[in-house]
Amino acid sequence: MAADSSAPVRIAGIDPGLNITGYGVVEAGPKGPRILEAGVIRGRGGKTIEQRLSRIFEGVESLIQAFHPRALALEEIYSHYQRPRTAILMGHARGVICLAAGRRDVPVVHYAATHVKKILTGSGRASKVQMQSAVQREFSLPSPPSPPDVADALALALCYYYLGLRTTQAVATTGSVRTVL
Image (tube, rainbow, N blue to C red; front, side, top):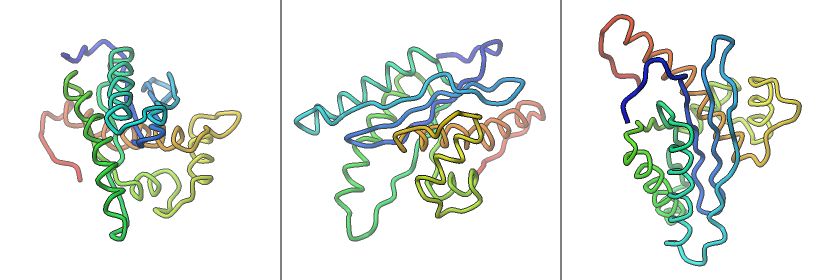
């Protein structure tokens, strides 16, 4: 998918999960970011892991087809070393999300949860409630986004808006190439 320079800049944020995958689509505008759509993709109804992954893939693919995001911000895997199985299962979910983005030529940017929390709240150890409140404040919402997976997805999109989008615009303006960590 070729980027249309006249099209609005849209960013998809995705918080992967086998049961509930949160998503949020944000559009960058002159007055700042605004939410176009947010919700969840439910993998829970699938009886097998293959069915769950298929539902996640189809949901993300549908989201990309509907909104044509410039980038997809995806939460990195974090699992305590005592729970390696959790990391492996989350890797499956992240894999099908990356596949859906790759099939539509949408670049995927990966952010650690602690980094996103630090950007939005000032603390890398912010709670789910603190994250929901931060997203509510950023978008001037009447109530916090729920479930927390939706708030996390919107936070990922905001992280790209604040870090990735501005860097991309600076690179386009100056013509220089740089890597952002």
